[in-house]
Image (cartoon, rainbow, N blue to C red; front, side, top):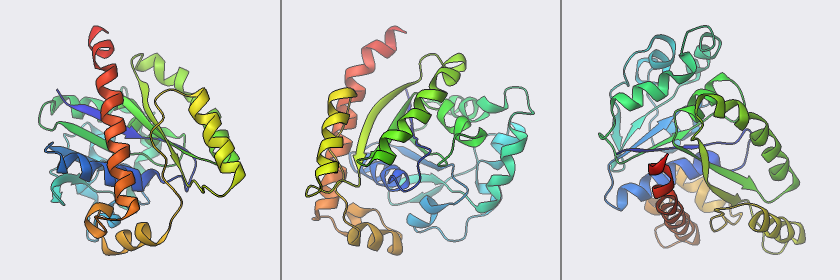
Length: 258
């Protein structure tokens, strides 16, 4: 069976796109067949993975606007990629106007069940219709949380929409929370990281705030573990992926029972 994960937060700057692309590559390095989907019209994930020439027909546009099957993906860095372009934003107003439109991506992925071991979706940083379609397509969410007050405030938005999502997908849950933008020498960061670990289940190892490697990898269109395989950033990605695998395995019997 295919496991579908959506990296989800409406807070910009939380590292959502970086997490999506890099854990996709790490899953592929571990021998999985992986599909990475850029569901964000800003298309930062697409360009971060080195794709500069994507066209609208390669995106989720036709899936969400007309129940088309998934487009043929590109193959990059050892995994498959459905890219995004800015015009993908034009699909948002049409989603609620179609019967079942909000679940169109879920339906398209179900028709391809088994083709990939893992599907990872990068959702837009919003609580709109496109973000909802990306969230509802998933079996579980991966939620980045900045270790700032802004990060904890973003959890209120998640808590507000989850009851709405559960009306359509009662089994949707958070597989992991990923603390991001941590600075070990900042008292606020340490305190908030402690709160997150105490109050939330399934918290991964944190991502420390360091810009050079992340920015350099994005500029080159490479995953971090390719751009700087021996870096602390690469090690953090490997650890987060291992944590996520552990959490998913721990929840597998429960999901199977439902």
